[in-house]
Image 1 (cartoon, rainbow, N blue to C red):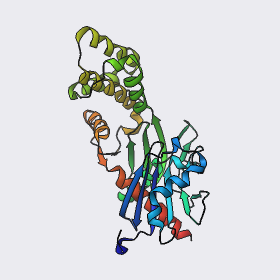
Image 2 (cartoon, rainbow, N blue to C red):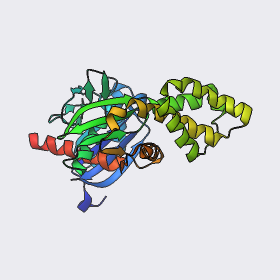
Image 3 (cartoon, rainbow, N blue to C red):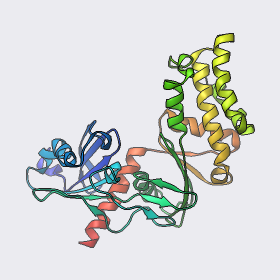
Image 4 (tube, helix red, strand yellow):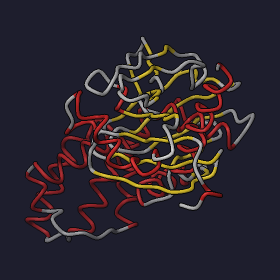
Length: 301
């Protein structure tokens, strides 16, 4: 790293399975690194060493402020950053300081909570803040696909309400642990089967459990291929989710966080419902949110 591109702070996206760090000069990434030292594999005393192993070279000329988001702030993380109740802005003015040594300054972004229906998010609030930084004045619904997909209602710069669906985790569990693992063992995708399953699930979400076993029966009796079965499984789960989340997306302006396969699947599932959703780069939104948190912290000092 050249002297001209020396960072003035460090952005950290710390999830359950991965740790990603960025040397930042203002809002510009100078350098990046990552490891598999996610929150899920670390004890409390191991967080600082895991971070220093990635950013040690960036700290040679002195410590830099570190702004972190994600599961690092959970109860099982480095330090618990208390939830903030919605409706509220995505980011608090003050962040939670992590216990460190040798002058390292690490601040962690708080997650958001909702009392009724009960729900929580941690890490997504930073992505939401970044999305709003990139799209000022935007009102509507943001969909954040993932293991636990979230639908978030935004208005006047605040998170008004949100709902989480375990569709991604259900797909992984069903395709890897259930009897259907024998029918979706291969990769591949059938777009027509996905669209049919979306319509089926949205029309009759109460039939989901029966339709799932039907995938195995069709494979045994009619030799349905893995790409068709895999796409149908995804369509049934996402279609059931869309049926349950109708109040969020119906008649709303929609943006989807992500540009990969899962985000495009949600986009294509919404299109027949008359909704053309905008796709948003996840890393760009995350870094914009962490940058906003860093600037808020600087303003308080």
